[in-house]
Image (tube, rainbow, N blue to C red; front, side, top):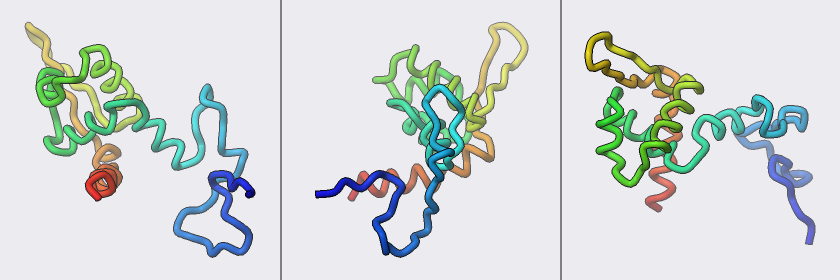
Length: 128
């Protein structure tokens, strides 16, 4: 039995809607990804990240407390890490309101909204 590697279609297979990433686009985890699938996986990687994104898609904006209440099994450290990850990826923006006590609201960006079909497909696949 031969092993087919990911990203390489068998000889004679028809071209599908997804293009192959050249091997040069596949980089070690210590570098910035260049393959579009890898870029998406980096933005959504980690346990809980898609569920945090799902909450933003449901409400467009949220405070840390609202997210914590919506995902009670998620630890504070992991939620903080996921919000930082989604902020670095440009999926959400962090807005701090001046005053005391300081208030922080996270807002879904256009780049984040563009992930809705991805999350919807994950929902549909998981429901099937």
